[in-house]
Figure 1 (tube, one colour):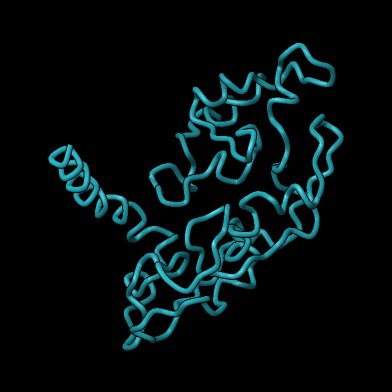
Figure 2: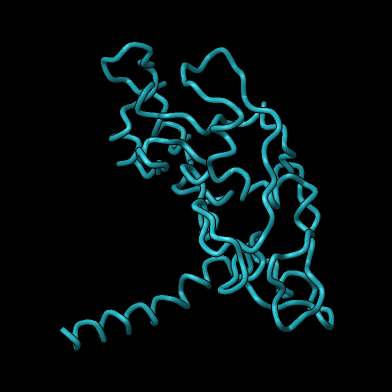
Length: 214
């Protein structure tokens, strides 16, 4: 058993650098490798979002090192049968994402600044990345997907695929029921392979069609 545990630990250590390298040089790399490398810049990769000490535990993200920014308005289109409200939006990972993508908080102080000190890199967000806190023109989140998928229950939508089909195609769901749509249902913030940080390639609307039967 001890030998087995040692092998598992070694495998994790070997895998750890690869995980960090996935965001290095990407739009989510806020270290001085993309900030110009000025004297005193912080060259740590993970600290802009996470810290091993001195941070407040969050159910939405491990060791979160930033503030939160709640949505103030939400999608209200008449073409969706899901039940959701501002509270359910802000119970997802949206406040974590908006702590940079609200367009005003990306340069905010970290909860636990790195020991190296230095200047935080605060890039200007492009128009597509600056969501603000008004999400009324963004894909709805915070709703129970299984309650509206193409099952046989009342209020379900025949144009929404079964949750089992969506998860098989790569979409992820969260919350206590593992049925709730979050930002992370479609995005992987640590993997820039599919722009913009999508879970799967969206060529020919591949990701969209994982949920939508059109």
